[in-house]
Length: 208
Image (tube, rainbow, N blue to C red; front, top):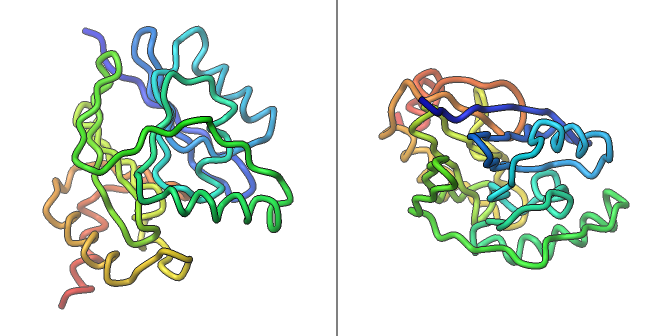
């Protein structure tokens, strides 16, 4: 029986977790967060001869989108609310990272609620604003995995003090996690993996 394989690389200046889903001749890349040639080559070596059907960015900050242009993908995805965030990211790239940002010519915009299928790699898009207005989490039921970007980390949630961030939105987003299966493995944009059951312990305390 064919199953989806998951690979993780930690890359870039801010140690972004890039995830690569592999199935037969198809690959999907989540958050390619590097412009380093060697790290891009590492990603491409994992992909091998497979065709990249999708690059999905959990949000529009530099350390999650900067490598997208360098992955030859059929389609690129981001939430539509991140369009303005991407414009700010271009400024940050030039003025803070000192690395002009090259983006794909076109992003396919997501709204949340989509169920995408890339050659058997089935993913559900969940809109989780708070860290940024268009932050998303990506659910793989097959892998029992939730890719949380900068929304949810081991032991904490993402920052809300960046432009477009919102404490109120983050609190509403965290409520969504309380309704999901404890057994889900959490794959965050930075740091270590965890389980949703473990993270619910501190999330619940926010509402006591």
